[in-house]
Image 1: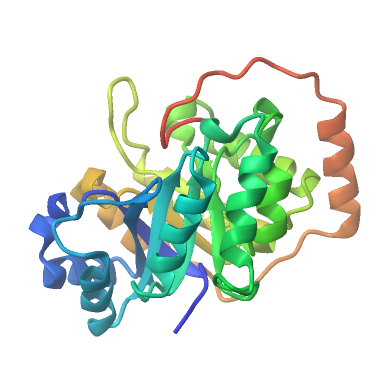
Image 2: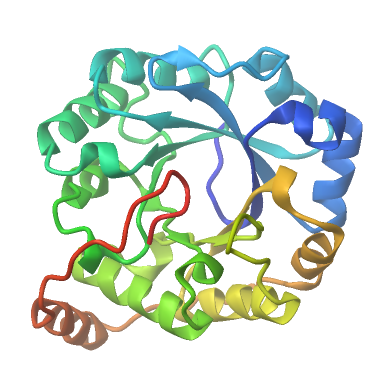
Amino acid sequence: MTTSLHGKWVWLWNWRRCDGGDPGRVAKRLQDAGCRGALVKAFDGPHWFDQGLPWREICRELKARGLAAGGWGYLYGRDPAGEAQRAIETATYGEADLLVLDVESEFKGRPEAAEEVCSRISASGGLGPDYPLYFSSFAIARYHRSFPFEAFRRHCMGTAPQVYWNAFRWPLAQSLGWTYEDYAALGIPPSDVFPVGGLYQEGFVRYPEPGDVREFVRQAAERGSRGVSFWSYEHMNEEMWQAVASAGLPKEEGEMSSREYELAAASISQLATRVDPGDRNRGAS
């Protein structure tokens, strides 16, 4: 069974740090927060990611408790064939409902690596073009012009940009606004954008305000997104969980007009190229 990124999801990085890796406790927390499913790290590059339990067991435990289970992996592009094979096995042997490719600075200036890994995954001999494949990367595309967005856009049915406004130190509205503007200019409509909110605290980065979390979900839905997700389970405190639980996605789906697309494309084309503010794994704008 496959599904989509519609609804609310939470990313899990280290299973054992998420309520001790207890499937029942993990499932209850997600369900109490109104989440449709979890995105669990399955692989890193061409290797399985050690979660203490095999990926397939984690996947089955979540599904048995009524949740969808998406798999994700961090890709480096150094071994496209190996990374593609591990992604394919996450979905086939591992029974993932969907797959998210976390692709960041390692792919900058390397469209051939992006094309190879994606084409291997989506080929008829892999998962096929209809499997729910997504990519997660930089939110503010204008700062990352050497990243091969086009290759991932062509092979994936949607994107989960990392809109970590608390890490950007920008207002929420500006962070989301530029994200949708930039992705529209790349040919990706809001209905295919599933933004990720950074509900973590690290170094100078502080947890976002609970009200901003609710507003993040509201504004994403208002702009036309059909789902959102949050990074990450092991980093969220009780206040963040309560904020997610109180944030609802409306059933109505919005859509950006063709005129708005034209304006967004014209806007980004006029922007001067700026120096990247700096990349960090899971935290770059």
